[in-house]
Length: 414
Image 1 (cartoon, rainbow, N blue to C red):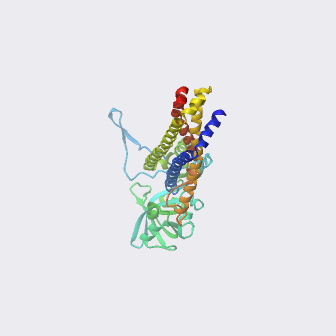
Image 2 (cartoon, helix red, strand yellow):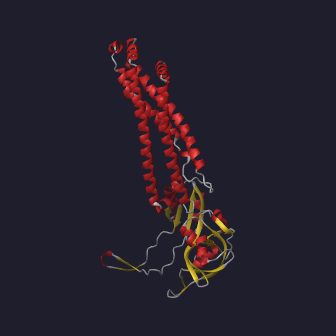
């Protein structure tokens, strides 16, 4: 308590110097929290933009090896492969895999789908499209089609389709128009040489804009049963798409589901390797800026306390002559650094939180999202408080050690 009261008295006796130093620490903490809120907010926005319209984990059938039709010399096998003539891989049975995935902790929803390439035609105009066959009650479970609908209604009965807005523009169609959906898959009859294509007359029930070019330009949603007939998957599905509670657990949960179902997992992280490298680079840049702000705090505290030691040489000498040990002198000045860091950090956190909210409010767009992706809730305030206080305490060690080495006689005489 003696060292604490002495440190507090030194700080109070130099109010202007203490106020300026607290302000300097506060500015450093303000920079720290602002950069944290900005970088973390940007990372969250990028992640949300990418994962909002796609599955976090996709389960697909394992690739099949072609049949060996004769043994070759030297132990090599010859395979019968005819590109383009093999049947599409299908998950059958799939309901057990869907139920198992749904019961797995951390899985929000598991959706079986039929995927296939087709052409959508109106008169002489036809466009290559990607058809997603999905149960009507699960529309919006993976991609937010329900919120992205710009015209029509969210209806997906037999013979109904939902299409992207750019696709509707290319075909010059609107809600209620009838089109021909022609399967691009080949269906094999009893003879492998006989192929046929399947056509379906469909009605546009809704038009959506997801903001993803591939989906808006080529995306078609079709009823699951009709999609099975169109692509010849009467007893199975193409993939199982899964949404998770925590997108960053995609790798671990994907491996777990693969072991349980025997299917091949693909995560959103694997499909977005560039995003990961970009987020890592962004995190490194933010860490460097935050480190420089802490270094500035440490330099400011150390230089100010060195000046305080020089100004109080005679006082320190008198304390030493009264029998106050070097340890007490060291603790006194280290406590000054800790108190300065703590006070400045608290002020800086309040300023940083308020500034982040103010900037978010001023940059809010009509869509409800700020033009600057800052998130006040992710300003790392506790970390800033601890690091700024610790940096100030460490910065005070050298001035404290310098004060403890003052010779009492020389100090009093000077």
